Length: 497
Image (cartoon, rainbow, N blue to C red; front, side, top):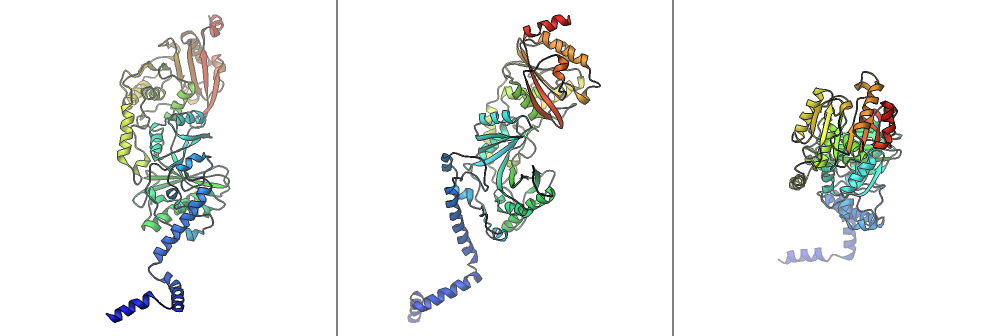
């Protein structure tokens, strides 16, 4: 008992000189003990606190793991969790090898966290996409070429995928940094906490695009990003995800500008214009989001009549029916975010159930599609059936556009007429006869026509009120808008008679 007590006493109260020498010896020997992992953890926490203070000073707590060019008001600093937002972002001065050593598992995703997102769209639809995102309640919507930036929480990411008719994808920005060399891309990819969304149980695909980037090989840049993602996950979890370029569980997009690299997590999976109902496409079809964009640019009122005299496989009219009925464009398709880690299935099901509860039972005005090709009409009817539309929602019929009759005193005619390869030859007489029909039968109607023939208004002897540059695939098109007013064309009709 006494010897034990003396032992305890000696350990508790060593001599001052011995204490100093012992502490020095301990400090020299600590890295060799098994307490090194704990020491590293403490060092990480200290580093994180320093980074927190620095980020608070620059008022950027809402951006996650990346610098952002989007300006935010000060009151947004109260939202989110600064510690969670910035926990794993290494400082610019940390060497690449040190970054790997500082890897720590990121926290579980929280709905309240705010993300910077980007929604790409067909060129020419940026302004109407911005209007759509504003209407959905998203913050800091900023249109740019071929898309819009905006901010939202993770539930907002799901809502954007479900409700956007015009976006091609919804991309969440997870990393951004200046780059001068391909290895900078590797470091950036290693700094992003991919373990929040994916792991070895997922398959991965990385795509790279660039605008005025000085990098010599985009393929090598793509490989560096892929290596960075896999290196981090292997360090944390002992395994790396497999690569699948056809049907991956997770998609990452690397975008390079003149001096910056940005990493996006693709939450959509398949492109959003793939609604899940169009199997029969016909000739020169419009993609669904382009058709919805044309309707938006035309100013069509969903409570008004709509006619497409060159309806083809019915894309414009089916999109119009879903708009008028309030059917979310993503209601019948899967999304990429459903395959990511920590996906809240119950919350997603509740969001879809709420959307379905707001779908209207019937339309207020007629939707009519006409095409001279009986097979096109059959394809349109099959597509409408797959879109869960009853036969009386859209009236499809075989007929000639030059013989069409207005189904209402006023309304909209929106169409994608035959042009280029869809016509055997440029039949100017056809356009003049169709124009005469419009002037006689569709007075007080709004007409919007998309075509790659930039001289179409001249052929039809009509003066467009507006023209919008658009691309239908690789075709450089124009959307011409006309307003048919009776007295404006009286002289033309008398001359034709």
